[in-house]
Structures are given as C-alpha cells and as structure tokens.
Amino acid sequence: MRKQSLKILGLSDDATPEEIKKAYRRKAFLYHPDLNPSLKAQEEFVKIDTAYQFLINEPESFAEQISSTENATDFERRKNSALYAKIANELKKNQAKAYRNNIMKRFLFFKENPLLDVFMAGLTLLFVGYGMFVMIDQMIDPQEETIRAYGVDFSFDGFYYMKLSNDGALSVNVPWEVAARIKSHNGDFSIVDMEVSPIFKIPRRILLVNLQDVHSGWVLLNVFYNWVIPVLMIVPIFWLFYKKPSYPMIVLANCILFIYPIILSIHLYITLSFRARMLLETL
Image 1 (cartoon, rainbow, N blue to C red):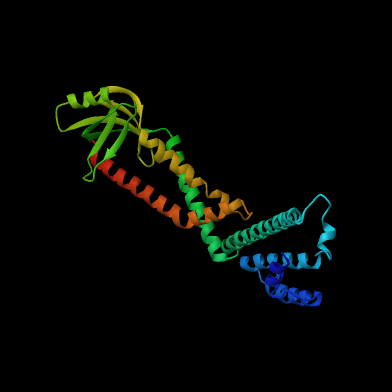
Image 2: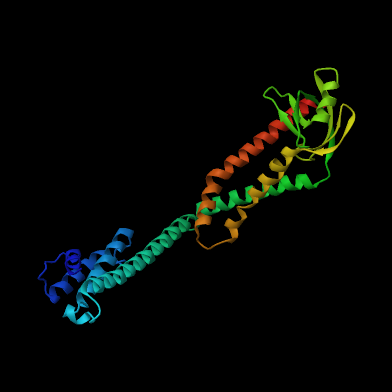
C-alpha cells in the first residue's frame, strides 16, 4: 500500500516525510476542486489526498498494530477495506457535486439569458393557452352536423371513430351492428348525423347512421386528440413557476424548444385539414 501511495504522489520508495509533503502540495495545487472544477481533476485529488493521508498516518512499526490473534494479511485486508470505502464515498460525493453543478449550469443557460427566457415564457403561454382552448372546446355544448360518410369498417370494441382518406373521403369505424346498417344502405356513401365541437368542429358523438339511432356512441379518437394532447400542452406551465434547478426542468425546457412546437403544428394541421374536409362533406 505504501508503494502504491508513493507512486500516486510521484515519489520513490525512500522518500522522506518532507518530500511527501512537498509532493502533496504540488499535486494538490494542480487538482484541488477549488482550482480545477473538472470531474477528472476531482477524482485525481481524491486519490492524491488518500495517498497522502495514508503516508503521514502510516504506523512506525507495522508489527505494533497487529494483535496477538491477528496475522499481517488480515490486518492489511481490514486496513485496505476501510481505505477503499473512504475513497468510494469521496468519489460519490464529488460525482454528486459535479452533477449538481452541471444541472445548475444548464438551468442558468435558460434563465440568465433574457431573450431566451422571454422566448421560453412566450412559447409556454402559447402551448398552455392552446391546450386550454382545445379543452374548452370540448366543454361547450356541441353542435349537430350531417355529413356523407364514404366507406365502412368493422369494430367490436363498442366505440366509434372517424377516419379521413387522402382524397377527403370520410370513413366511420363502428360496432358491427351499425356497420351492417351502413352496408344495407344503397349507394356509395352513408348519411351520418353527429355532434361536433363548436370551435374546431371535431366529431364528439355519432347520433344517427342512415337515419337510424346508434345510441349516441362516443368517438374514440376524440379522447386522445382533444383531451390527452391538450393536457400535455398544459404541462409547460411548470416552467414559469418552478424555479429550482433539476433534471426534469432541463428536459422540460428542451421539450418546450423542440418537441412541443412539433406537437402543436401536427395538432393544428390535423384540426384545420379535418375541418376543411368536413366542410366539403357537409350537406
């Protein structure tokens, strides 16, 4: 253990206590956390400090440290085990400190740049406002519309949802008994009466198919499109009020900059495209 500690300090086996102190001061100046904040330097300083503490506290007589019932191998094993535990504990502390510093640095990158901070706040308000706007659209009393539904598909889950093809044709996925009613209707299309949201005009419930009651079946697609996504849009509100640096806040900041604009664009595109096709099919 002595040879290993001397090697860490860059000394020979016959180094004197004065040489050990000089070597420690020289290396500590290079790797001390206050002078060199890098993680590699912190790890190196732990090794240097541990080696120095071992050398200055090294017993003058090794035999005096061994009890009558203990041999040299057992003593060395116990001593090394305690030393390694101390090194591991110091290393964990330094890694945790470096992690906190890294999070603080990234968090301040967003908060200490005035233009970026204002831009982030603007995006946050845009997403939150849009999400609440969509949910309010679902809470207001719906309107009724009648459309031509082209095509049919079968579903056994008891739900209804609408599907638009690239050419603007609208398909209705319904339980098999409703699909049978649509199939029994003569012609290339079926007549569907349904409730739509008053703002975005997105289907909420199917009322009639070919003038036959379908027991007001809910539109399944509406649950994800008009509730799950809007709730996700409200999440960025935490960026305005939660000021403590943390890894989730860094992730949220990156989502606000890169992910949420894509989600909002897709939602808007589907909404406007769906509404345009609905207008073409409205009787």
